[in-house]
Amino acid sequence: MEKYISIRDQYCSNQACSFYKQIGKQNIAIHGKKPERLRCTSCRKTWVLHKNGPDYYLKSDPEKIKKALELLSLGLTIRMIAKRCKASTSTIQRWKAKFQVPP
Ligand SMILES: [Zn+2]
Image (cartoon, rainbow, N blue to C red):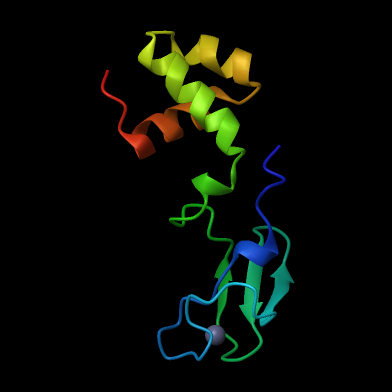
């Protein structure tokens, strides 16, 4: 699960850093495993993986999200959708909140 969270998708959130919010600059190093911490080799800031960053959800399979949202709009329950999309119920709930699907 959650393999799509990649170090390549992470960015430095230090506004003073020259790599601030830049992805793919190869300035990110792994700093720790539990929790997963990363370090910017430029400014030496460390942080826990941006799992809740704005890009996080979009790194999921877009087709899967689309399908989940479709099923939501059809009135299926979170549990049913999770099963069909092979995702956890909490993931579906996050997508629902993120994309603000009306109840
Ligand atoms: Zn930095």
